[in-house]
Length: 116
Image (tube, rainbow, N blue to C red; front, side):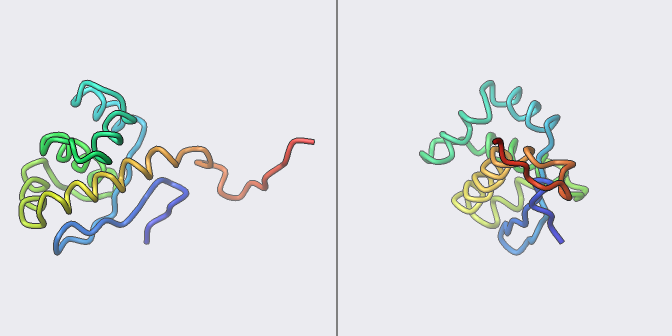
């Protein structure tokens, strides 16, 4: 079962149902591999301008971070079988989750204390 508070989400890549999660280390690896920020890849994905290499470079560490033992070749195969649009959609979901998570990590049981 996925835990959104840990930045996990379930993605469907063709016939594959996978748990995905990006850590800060994997975000740094993605940024280094694409030569830009995670926000830039989010923009490219939303505009349909991300390359297949960028899609693979987002999905591979995310799928690995979800506890799956995969490599880039396997992810490439799944993207090809599912279609590039499906791969781009999944990468977009992963990046969106990464941009929206992390604030509550480790504080799952903490109550909010509004400023007074």
